[in-house]
Length: 225
Image (cartoon, rainbow, N blue to C red; front, side, top):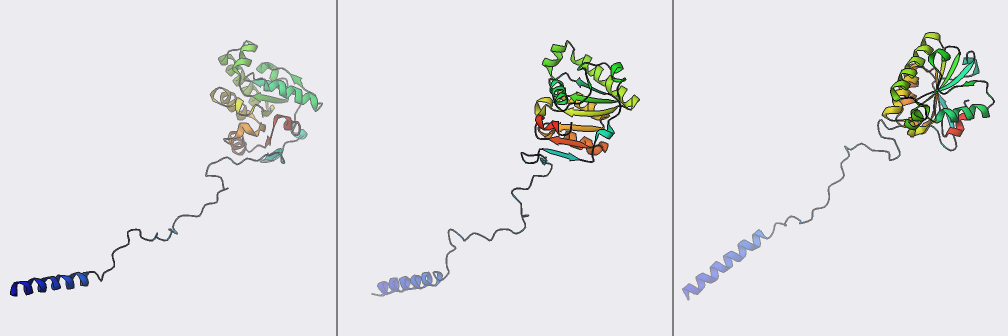
């Protein structure tokens, strides 16, 4: 009997201990989510990312001029249209000028000596390997011709309108060699905006302090011309 009483007493003691420990609530296995942090800056979904190009033209606003203006009063003497890079864009420029009834001379492969006889040069810039081949001119020869034209324009104070009409097809390593040359002597830039999606031409206009007209399509070039 004494042994049984001892066992019962021990069981009662254990029961009391377990009851006392059971008074503490266990931690929840799925705690409620914490409040969202307020340290993250708010963002605007439609805002362009830093450094992202901002488009100027649209179907409703097809021609945009920035950084000043360029008018017929800025044109000096006779006008010559030529190409550096021998892309088909120079032929499109020729067709557009005919459509507006402008007076000018067209020579896609004019030499620097010929350029020196004019007061204003409209320079279709952007290269085409196919165009160079059709003209029988190597890339090296065209680069040398382009540099001679640029030097002649600078030395003689010739007004230069750099026209980049070919969009993204006239960008890249080959074309940009000619584009960069044209921009060094340009007094005014006309560019189909697709070819300016990295800001190359608008940045150059700001750096040089010259006006630039962005057009939504090649056909819209009629307006500045």
